[in-house]
Length: 288
Image 1 (spheres, rainbow, N blue to C red):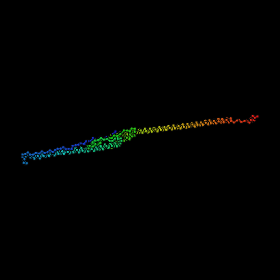
Image 2 (tube, one colour; image 1 turned 45 degrees about the vertical axis):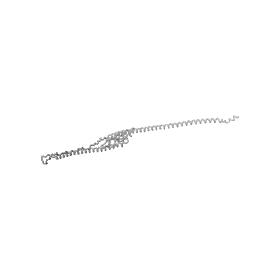
Image 3 (cartoon, helix red, strand yellow; image 1 turned 60 degrees about the vertical axis):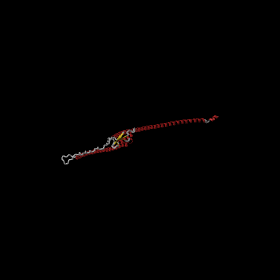
Image 4 (cartoon, rainbow, N blue to C red; image 1 turned 90 degrees about the vertical axis):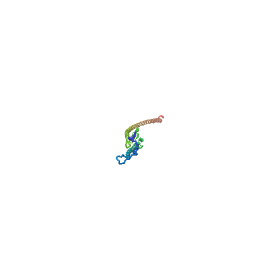
């Protein structure tokens, strides 16, 4: 993508070297004549006297002088006209040079503004030049290439990048039509990135809500499992107590039975070990 000045400058007018040499017109030399030898000269007061040769010479010289004066006047007029054309051409050249200098400054400032704001996203400016009447090269148009690719998978980064592209496109004091088109494209991508970012945030919020719900369900399950385990423990403890009581009764009964048998054995042993008592009078009877 290119951001350019977008304004084409009219082709320069080449300087015209006009010939300054004026036409060389040599003055016409007067014709001179001499009176024929042997021709009598009549007195000046004769009525039918012919014109003297000297008078004809004066008239010829006068006519030649008048012709020379006309030719010199034409030469001066031509020289004046040539100087006027040359002066007009010089004025046009000076005006054109000033226009080219102004255009060169405008184009360079325009492209530098793009590059300064675009930073690493923008390339160095490139220019098209024309040669002025003074032989110097002047920039008449230029362009700056700028990266307008989206950042894959990162709408937030894409939004920031397109915002910078838009600022770079509108950085010059007078953005061109192409500059405004680039800015509009960047704004469109900013809108798309913002929508994608909003959707991504909604998905993240929904995922967090689902996670919290899952945690609540897990906690509820754990609480129920703990309650069931507690009740089971109480039931087991109660049954254990009953079993202990039953076992205690059984041991006591067995011990009482053992004691009873032991008493019976003792009594039997005692009867066996002790002789029976003689009834009164029985001894006398046996002696007699």
